[in-house]
Image (cartoon, rainbow, N blue to C red; front, side, top):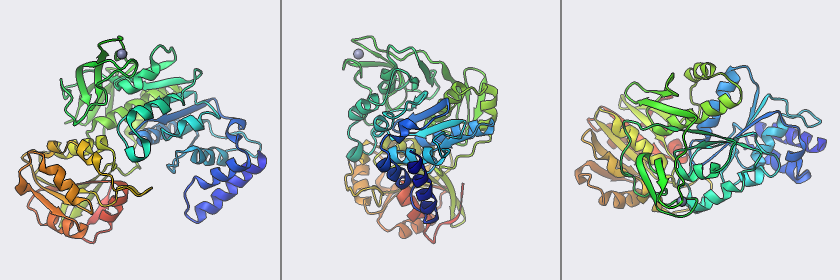
Length: 443
Ligand SMILES: [Zn+2]
């Protein structure tokens, strides 16, 4: 074990000097000592976070809150969330004889790999955020993801679950050790599912048809199975009010949290972080205080200028329609006139795929508001986007199709709108930021 730890630390030092990713050192250590993760001594508090969306933001927020409250935290901040990345994070924090030095271990885990990682050790608190269609080429259908996440859950874990997502609530059915988080009925809820599809239409427990009293977004809401009685559980940590104009939510009727931007997904991340930190022993008042100072480092929203006018880059995820739906909501909520650019130039940075069915799951119809004066479809897949927009009611004269990103930015800069929105994935975000037309990039 000692030599595997030493090897991991050395490889990590060399790797970081060479600017390499963080999974290689852990991978080498696992080759030398395959069960090393079950042999090291972990601190009492080990928190893990998995799910389709919001993992990184939730983990960042938890790490910030715990650190602000005087706890040292070992976490895989480099974003390597498969078993090897987790090994790098833990082994680099170990003493030579295998004791993790930090007060808390905090793991972001890929939803497909959690079942492999947690064979070696069990987190004390296991946060599961939500389950949505995400990178189906790689991850498969949500039903499959639902099954493999279940394989990562053990009886000795305390689960922290999203009660509003039936796919997640199913994991806590009949268990004692669960903290439920969710939102009360909110002003912006709808009686019907307003998205393009509904992955909560059938009960994950018995397959029966589900009934909803209301939807918060997508398949999150208040549900009940018409056959087996499976229903949304009562929550322990609750958003009791959300005021998007004031950019503020209220948790449990008394704790007010300011939001950097109005987005229900961000509210859920905040709630999950609150629940996890409270379990880890931080007082609610202290959590709220630390949250106020939290600035997201994940760069999901960046400001920029083109032609002197303000723009906002909303980093979504290709192959993930829910992330796009939230970005569209943010853009459509702005009362100023805007030009909105959607870029799909390279679908994934990790593997090659030209599969674009996910474009059909995105609710582009919501951009059909009067203040969105222009929609520019850009990048290699601009014609796939154009075909998708063909079946919306958005007037054709608002849509511009332009493959070249520089040309698209010039068209946007030439519009007479008050601001711009650009939505795209990490990999295409870099290309957009590098354009000479784009100035003053900030957070
Ligand atoms: Zn049922």
